[in-house]
Length: 74
Image 1 (cartoon, rainbow, N blue to C red):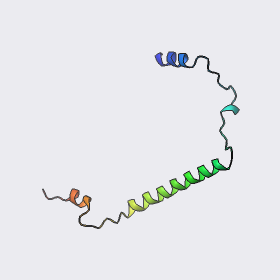
Image 2 (cartoon, rainbow, N blue to C red):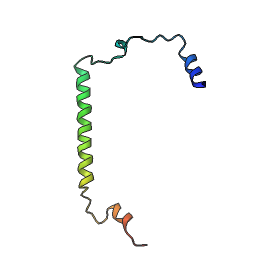
Image 3 (cartoon, rainbow, N blue to C red):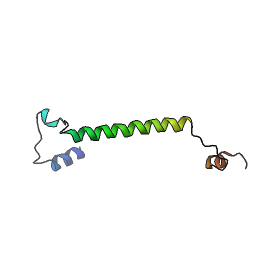
């Protein structure tokens, strides 16, 4: 109730588009496609590296911090 009143007060005088066409975002040029392509590439590379290092972390060093933490010598 209070939130509705606050939103009503804040949005007084604001005009909103009644049509669905006014709310559709579409690419405006080649730069939008480049930004999306680079973003998708970064996500794919990150996902690949996440899976790779999760499956085979290759932490064989005896002085690695995980060995000190997981040691049962109390």
